[in-house]
Structure formats: structure tokens, C-alpha cells
Length: 112
Length: 115
Image (cartoon, rainbow over all chains, first blue to last red; front, side, top):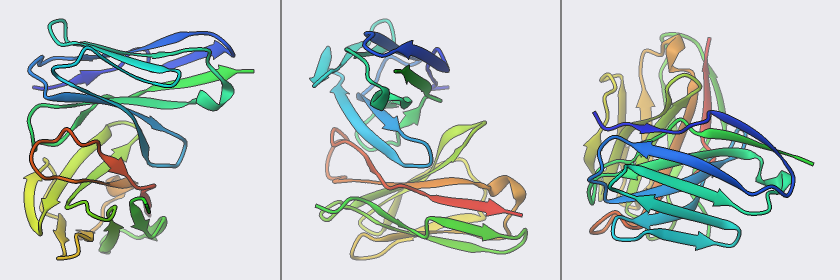
């Protein structure tokens, strides 16, 4: 069964700290991996998409890496801010037109 | 460019009733997917439509159905509502043509409460 796991389920850090969120997947034959952010009661906002042929993607203070062989991805957030507080979800696509498989997310709190 | 629009934002229904949720994708997007999100199960895939045809289906009972119109707008219907159907229902769109290296864009969801 294709599963995506995110650990920890919740994380609290002081403002300004650099942090890493983890995502692991059981089947390494992925097509791409996407990181999302979800604010309470809202939908998901796409942050970064990494294709299977890529090792990392960057957007501003965010950097996502992909290691297919070990079945892992990380989302690095530099110089965290209270506005980064949200739930971060990782999702994997296994082929061109199959649905994404989501992890349950990591709830991040950045304390001012 | 307008984002994915879902209506209504909130719904309260009683057991046994049926409900219809609506989703308007981003202009030019032909693929629309529906997900159910609950605290216990997380995000679970319901179905995906592309060019008015169901392209993928998740593992949900037949009470959950959907359709897509020629303008790519989509609706999902849940019949004979159960308490366990209470959830945030999210719609997402992408271009859908060819491979799925286009990111998925989500609406803000419809919060369904079944009493």
C-alpha cells in the first residue's frame, strides 16, 4: 500500500529558528512530490513541487529536497516567522494522472 | 486569475438528507478532483474528473457521486447522509493535460456538518 508519513505531527519553535519538516513514502517509484500549506479552516496552498528527476526546489525561505532512493523529502524553512504557523502537508503522485497520496501533515507553531 | 471557488462554504444537514457541493476550477483547468478531510483520516481522495469523464475514483461508497460540466465546473453529491460524512470537502484543479507535473490548486472547501 502506498503510504505517506509525516513526523512529527506537531512542532513548536521560537521565531527566527531554521527548521526541517520530514516526509517519507513507502513506494519510491514516485512521479512527483508536492508540499502544501493549510491554514485553519482553509484549503491547501501549493508551496513547492519536485519532479522525480529533481533533487530540490526553492522558493524564498523554503527549500524542499527529494531523495527517492530512501523514500524521503524534507521541507526546510529558514528564519521562521509567526506567519509560518500552519499545517504543512506532503503529497506524492505515482504516475501522470493518478491522484495524490497525502500525509497527515505537521502542525507548525512559530512562537514570537 | 481567480482561484478555485467552492460553494457553499458551510452546510448543516441532518442524517438521511442529501447534499450537493459545487466547484468552479481555475480558468483553463480541465481536471477537477475532490477530497474529504477529517481529523482522523486526513485527506482522502474521492474522485477526479477530466473533460466531463471520471478519470479516477477513490474508495468511497456509491452514496458519493460527482459530475463535471462542459465548462469544467464540477459538483459532488452525497446521498443518505451519515454522521460520519461530516468533514471538510475540498476541490482542486489543475491543467490536467498530459502528465501531472502541474501543481494542484485547492479551493477553501465546504464544511459539511451532519446532525
